[in-house]
Length: 235
Length: 299
Image (cartoon, rainbow over all chains, first blue to last red; front, side, top):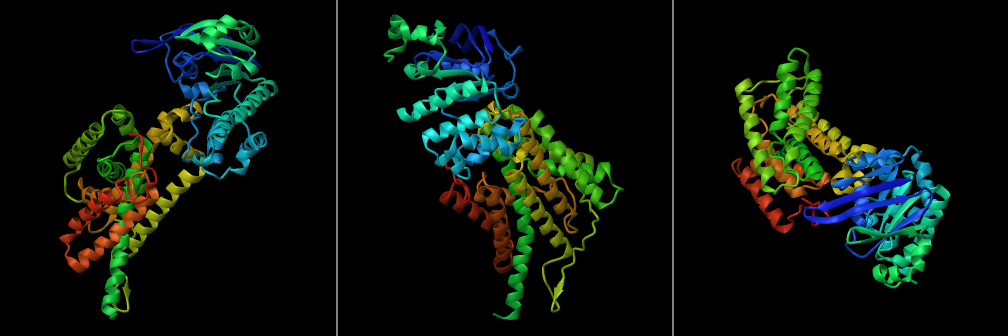
């Protein structure tokens, strides 16, 4: 479980997050929704230590994450798949995965095998440079690279960005499966609200850095005013 | 082709190879620092010089050659690590001119300090390898036991660096930290340590090179021992591409051989001019170096 309390983050005079509080429960998918500039990415970057908050607390399995270095937060079991995927293009698929497995306590070849089973296309392309992969394959690689370290909390930043609808829906299925089978805590940041709400258990809506809704996903889907106001059209 | 010309050509190739591997090592050490931290280290000759003095003169002047070599290399690791932590760390993310000015200044300071402590008199470093060229059919071959020692050592170092980067976990982390520092941190890589390690390794490679140069019977160790060689190594790194270890080595060896021919067949005064022409032409034709694939990089 991860608890964020009264978190405020600013970039100079610009407040990116103001008094944001939320909980993401173990084994559930918590979607963080909102328009561009709502502070979604900042929230993830602050959780994983890339951005220092102005105030507030972040507690993950009784560890405070505030002012902790990103590499130490990663070692606590937080996997962050950044926006734009962060796959190292100059590395082969396998080198990317080896890098992800660096701090995992599992045997490397077992870890690789597990990821190649989950994402067979990565196994077929293991010796290819990541630059040669399609958008969907890069997203799979980024996910596999985070998963190989056996995280307990997975932060996903706009995984559907730039993907074809079919690929997106496959990806969402994978996220749902993982969450259930590995008892993962997932925070899923999406601009594409309908996609995220289809698999999320819980949802938080950010608007200009503030939490404007924090409820079960089904409740948010049912609230027409809220949806129209902050999420546009949600089917 | 007459026998005289043939032996002259063979001699030039061998002599050029001996010089070229040294330029290649200097270029490799420059590439290691550039790739890991994006800094062009103008003190890349002077830092190993200090380490070599520390090893050769201060710590171990009665221990024999091999312990001295080892102590120098360890001192080189130390000089590299301390320099990164104390001096270089403050230069990351600053305008490009800042590290250049600082590292040129550091070069001048180190050479001044070395001269003040150890004087500018060359110090010979006795070693087990004869500098006298072998003879083939009554003619000198331009290859001595000492030059074989230089070439073999350079090849071992180059192979070692390649293996480290290609096949080890540490090498993977070093490359990842240079290519994508933020992503590496998200994957638990201690990037700050890797940056220091880049300097440690680079100064270690530079120190091995300096020990070879200073062990040469005809050179000896002086505070300026690496100045001229640094210039050729720098040109090799620029020609080969600052991002490419293989390019550094190939360019170093090629430049060594070309310059040996120029010195022999044209005039020894033409050597430095030729080196600069090579640099200018290669920068005009391939500004990123002959062996660099990417055209843009983070600075």
